Image (tube, rainbow, N blue to C red; front, side, top):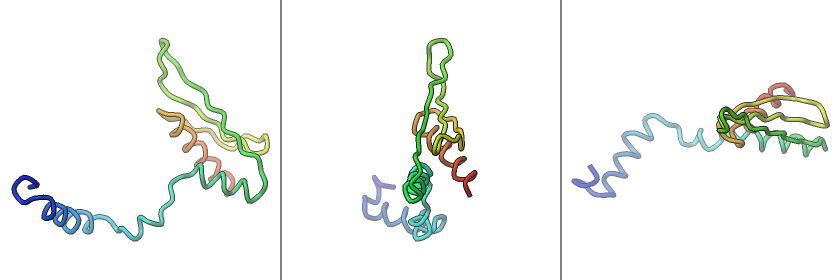
Length: 101
């Protein structure tokens, strides 16, 4: 389509025929799925200490995953596993938030 119609028409088509039909852009603006940030803000408000302990899971000298533990004021709150440190910490933060709520 881009080759035949050009950039402007392709952009118009994608935005109006695909994005606007299947996604509520205004609703997406308010979704916050950064759980680590949410947990950090909560801990800062309550003056708690937040620590993430992340370890590598190896098999045959290859890193296959990461495991992260969310610890608030020396109390274990949640554990997450992911393919990256960031993903593992996000998953641990989500579990910790669920445990705290």
